[in-house]
Length: 151
Image 1 (cartoon, helix red, strand yellow):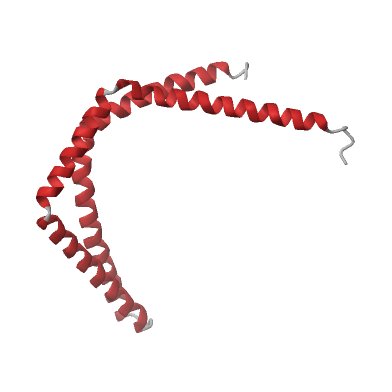
Image 2: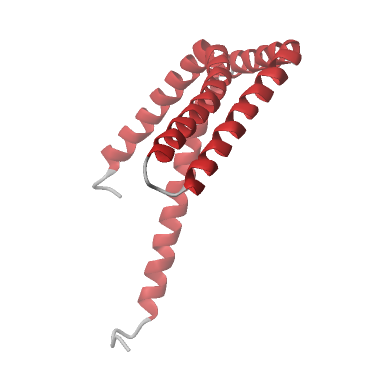
């Protein structure tokens, strides 16, 4: 532990800096990330449907079995149906979606304003260094019980 003291202190400092950076980024990007998540889910369902459809057409023109082509067509249809349902749910609940994103923004602002949250990585790190030292102490105690014969 003595030999690695500078590494441990550096890790503590780095964890504090990363926590501060995380707080600032969360304050800046909480709302855009919420909207990006919604858009990415919709686009992923549409893209998965398209790629399954394209692969189904590629398989049906080759000499492979027709079962895989049919399965891929079903996957494409299910992905597109889910994308449509997702869009309908978003359209019907757009007001609720905006309220929930506003709640995410408020939570991010509160989290950013609460600076003592930065201490959580430090406390967690110190707690686990203590657990590590306790287990090493216990291991040394168990190893010292042996008579050294190796049997």
